[in-house]
Length: 385
Ligand code: PLP
Image: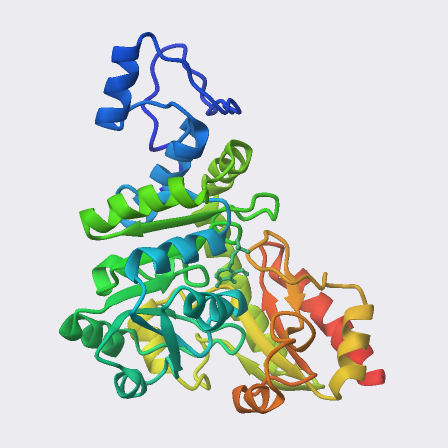
């Protein structure tokens, strides 16, 4: 999986994929142009495809066991394409209550404007999804590992339910990555990523990727991306190509660091609780093992004692960057109450166990001892606040 696998090198070809910024491509003749459009081969205009998008998509296709994946200008572009592909006016879509915040807003605020109604269900319980079904439910949008609670969706139950009722199951696989969860082998119909995160991995490229198992859906995703203008820029794809070459290496290291950090945090004074899918005390520890094997991910959540004052002091120690993202090579923390979950109702936050002391960690590839020392120093400062 490492190496520049989608390309076929020939003598004299550059090892590194060239960046092709051109917005437009020339054709030899009207007949040649006609053939390019008719056969969907070659390039005409970069909103409808360019070499860097083709290479990047092929690399992610290989990781996901997909074909014909489409690059989008952001992860939200990929979520939007998947939803637009699966539903039309008059349909109903179900979403997990624990989706990424903008995905929640897409389903609850934007889709109703287009005539698509939506409801939400607890993703850990397929029976809750079944109870929320309507006769016109056409699609379901879930994530395997919820953000930031790291609860594990009942993917087996949800896939069974969707298959039985002819519902398109859409999975945002950003947190789990194709190394953790092979979507198409587990009953998913459309899989997508915020490539911005672990796949590109350096917080310098904003991208999404989406692919469908079914060929007709694949074609629709392509047309939708061209028509709605959700295409990715060549430079971002070029950066992602480079990031993808080290994805497996980075992710394996980050996962090992995450497991070590979770255990270390659990023993640190001032930490009320730690959530990591690979720990025995995780509420869905058995399900995590069944779905993820040993790939429990690079995300850890924890709760500091001492509320907002302790949370401010923890960040002010400046030993770990506070940043509302994830998947960087560097370890970062986010504070959901003041960022991703700032518009969530207090009673919902309470039911999810998200409070002022709650942090989500995206674990990077630094030396594990250095990461643990950074958290020990910040936690110590928080306890003294
Ligand atoms: N899906 C998940 C799980 C995310 O965490 C994010 C962003 O944080 C997105 C989708 C949206 O991705 P992007 O920021 O690339 O639009």
